[in-house]
Length: 476
Image (cartoon, rainbow, N blue to C red):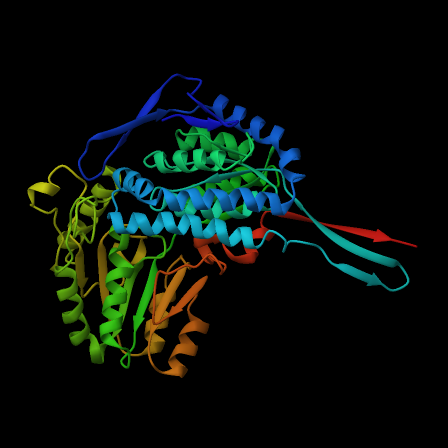
């Protein structure tokens, strides 16, 4: 499959390619161009040339194009989900949900097409003033491999509906669905150059896009180290940045919680997408008085999860996406065992089932009695490993939850209004769920505090990230 620049499918200037591998089988799916600095520059120039035409297109016409694209995506949902599962690894049901999410996000921003406008302000003794909102220009989006379709929509929805043009760099592991979605947008009538996709290494293509003087805004989702590098590079050009840098989301289970619902929430919140979600439950704190009952129910649920190729029926959890992530999870669990930093009550191994022998599979793992200094509680664990700790009360639970450099999401499970209010107010996170976890709707702003990033995606707030506000003063 080829890159998409200026509305055309093209190879890289280098003539080199890299392989896309199915993480469940190890088979070669496709090859995509290995982009270069020159490719990035060509894409930026294409977006720059298309900007004036797209910015002068009415918001209603932009919305018609995006809405047409969302309809085509819905018609081709099964085909797109199959492709997404092959390159990413998640179960087919999760891929179908993600493709539907892509369409839903575009449709949401179509509904906001007429909402970004300025204000009229009477200014005493100085006449009148009014404000107008203008698109920034060429923007860059750099997206991860865990939810490539959904996060693509989070970037292109607000960027394109507000009149900007965009160069998108997909993750090197999962570019195929992104390229196919871009071709659908072209089919729906998106003018050439409005959306360009360059595949290739982040340290080459990504850095070139961030450093380009014609790029006015960067939106990045990924690990904190890379986000800090992007912020450093963007500072020299005073570029706008939105950085969603992951997290170590806590889940608090109080003594009055609905334990059945909390167990179901923990299972989905941790093991959805093989634990590879920025807002996944990564640390679980349960009140001592209900810990034994809760952990017993949770262990039974974890043991019942079915691991296998995401294209097969009756699979609850697919493989990790890539060898690097697989090796990291294996090392992390081995480290826990070697240092005696917890007790593995289920999982902790590579499955022995023959159908899992060639892929990056790891058993869903539950670990209790985890000491506070463990890597499991300090790092962002991007995989199917859930550490469970016991706390005396809500104060201790909140203290432990906030004891991290991250602040993306958190959830509290309780029927008590006072506990719910305290948790929602005191947990340091960009989003706090009550009696649920993981769900992120396009209608609400999403982002983090501390090292989980800056800026917000989704909701009307995301539009302001892509618009310049100009004030015009009149003396009549």
